[in-house]
Image (cartoon, rainbow, N blue to C red; front, side, top):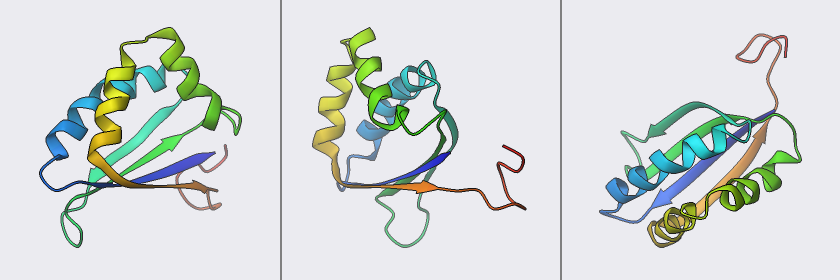
Length: 105
């Protein structure tokens, strides 16, 4: 199962977003999430970032972030930064096509 997270980052806050995510990503990896790719948009809305994650199962979509914070309360500071710098977030569950990434999973 794959998750596409698209973030509209407030103008001038991309560096703070990246700093917080650099600490959040390893915590989520510890919960079984695998970051396939993290991208900032080079055209269009250049204050937008997109992540593609591979998740172990649907339950982890909501449970893993809570478990990560419970395991390391210092992540709350990063969550606070992200809540300040993200204007909008869109989460989309993706299903792999037979010929694409994730084939045979």
